[in-house]
Length: 91
Image: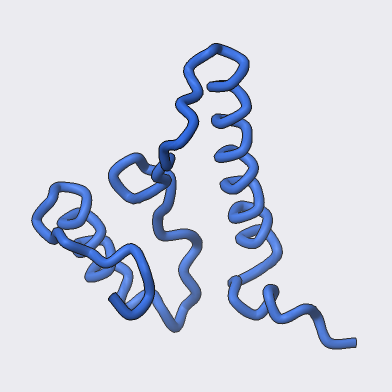
């Protein structure tokens, strides 16, 4: 039996679970904001590098030679050194 295609994008099931949990945290944070009366309707909540909501997960052996370079770029994005990053594909 072939696993669903989503599994092919992750190093292992633990990494997949991390990604699922990260999405659950986004839902939890939104629900908590609603409960605490802090939710602002009509706005976007951004889960990005600056807010530490996304980042580099477990890296396979094939990706390890590039890990430091990717981290440098992530740090530049966080600090604002790289800006005007499109938020939509093709823009």
